[in-house]
Amino acid sequence: MENSPIKAPVMTLTSGPVAIYPRVQEALSRPVPYHYDPYFLNFYEQVCVKAGRALRSDRPALILQVEPAAAIEAAAASLISPDDVVLNLASGVYGKGFGYWAARYCKRLTEVEVAYNEAIDAGQVAEALRANPDVTIVSAVHHDTPSGTLNPIDEIGAVVKAHGALFLVDAVSSFAGMDVHPIDAATDIFITGPGKCLGGSPALSVLDVTEAAWTHMESNENAPRASILSLLDWKNAWRKEEGFPFTPSVSEVHGLDAAFDQYLQEGPETVWRRHDLTARACRAGIKAMGLELWPARESIAAPSTTAVTIPGNLTTEQIISAARQTFGVMLSAGLKETYDKLIRIGHMGPVAEPVYAVTAIAVLGAAVRQHGIKADVGAGIEAALAEIPNGA
Ligand SMILES: *Cc1c(COP(=O)(O)O)cnc(C)c1O
Image 1 (tube, rainbow, N blue to C red):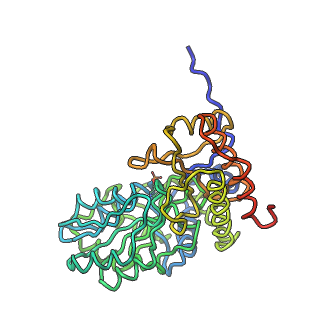
Image 2 (cartoon, rainbow, N blue to C red):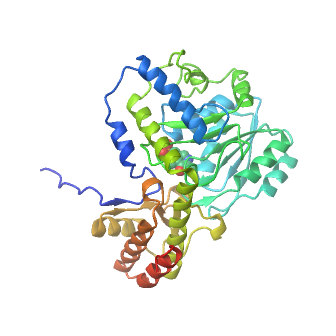
Image 3 (tube, helix red, strand yellow):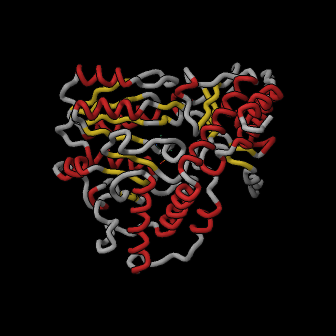
């Protein structure tokens, strides 16, 4: 017997992968060139330069042919040597996860860990560095997506630089959704990707790497070479005169280029503003409906994800299925430690528009009401509209 077909979603309001921009869709469908065609060699160099400009860096970006989770593992493998002492900052599932990779390569791992609805304070980092003066690398996640919370990454970066350690930051789900850049945060490895706020397809990674980090990797005898985990293999691949260590995903590079064009041509400040506005409207609506936000304070809530505490004794499955089956709207669950504790509404790329906040409130409100939880959807929508200029 055939399985019954599952209807495609009407709307994807997840924390990534997200709906992609039409121009990215168009770029992905272009003919596939040979990677050593002069057209592609030249194009690849231009995309790396454009990505570096979008990152507001003074060098071309490093593109890796893997999704960001693998790029983060590759950064750990390449950067962390058996002589390194790593201070890992964990305010959520991704932060904690980096510690498992770091522990595989370092001499010693020490961590600052806070509750997963909280943020790490720069003062806590300074204190941990005073207690562990031998720390050579600090790692952090800017927006720990399964919690919807932000760490004050620029302040933490200043503390790390004062100590003299290298700073590795996962900014996968915040870059392009708000004002966060490698130089401002004093990072040595800054990792992002197209599948979140850039509204692209989730196959590649984009990194900014300082000379200090390259020097450290080059002196790390254990840094992988001829490997999917190698950053060094790709160091010079951006130059059109250089070869590729292996075949890049040429279509995905077309898509990435279009995602950066969208971002730069619309204007970063404009893009951040609509992420911020959508999240603000969404949070106002959630509260007015009588539901609770997961982050301990709104000041640490991310503009690209609104995490909502699951009310009563409901399960993730009940809420996600109700939203998907009744409205065709896909929401995100929590992950690992936050699973069954929260539901996430994504505001990333093309859906970082306030109309989607209004929709999300109606959908989430109806989904919890299906399971007997009270939610004043009308009040929620009014409160969201009140945040939107000319909305009320
Ligand atoms: C999405 C995301 C990643 C990358 O995960 P993939 O599985 O590669 O998409 C890494 N870190 C954070 C914080 C993320 O939100």
